[in-house]
Image (tube, rainbow, N blue to C red; front, side, top):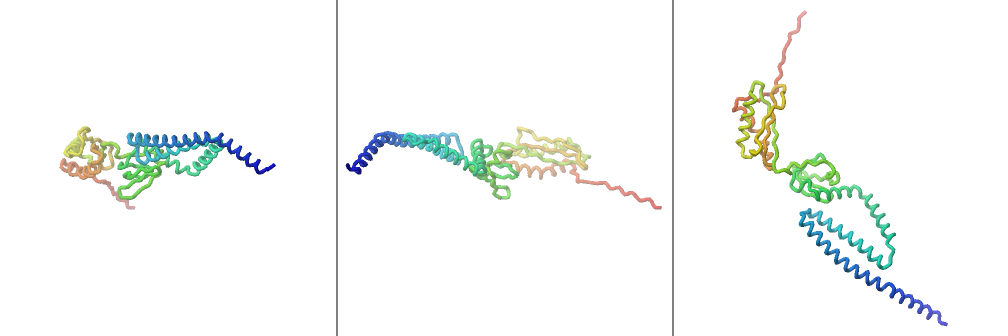
Length: 278
């Protein structure tokens, strides 16, 4: 008997059995893979369209689309290899352990990433806003997934990590269309508070930038060592805030001078007592 011939026949038989057994599964897996990739591309385009219609940030749209494609392709890959007969339980466990290890190693970066997603989704501020946060303040130049970039008034660039930024207090100075300008002035104890109020309100009403919906307000806030302390408040557009602030401060003294109201400076009375002579 020719043993080599027997081995070839057995090999041929086994190969035929494997082809008959696995060919339909492989063919079905290939068809599933092609259809799945086509469906994923449709889902990605549909997601991009929806996010664009909802005015999502371009960086966030790109990230969400990429993440959705990766997750869908991973699910498709696991489904395809399971159709062939590969056991996926241990494979999924390995992926899970690898993901946990990567997550622990990149904990800080992932925190900033999550903060960036929250900022881009809920929009507590936008590019061009003036904000104060984490002890820094400036105009928002750009919002990235990991960091937010500010330009300060003296033209310095500040980079804030999004993790702490999303979880701490943010003061958005320019979010509202109008702002109140708060000023303070002291008048002499010999002056009339009513006349000072009238002079300041008249001065404010002459400025076209001061909004008339909420009238200017002048009130007494305290009594200092040398003056009666007044607070002076007017409302204006946010874009006019600093111009109104500085111009009003400049105009206060001429307005009070015209009304013959003195702005005192700190004074101290010194009494000299002669020492007794023995």
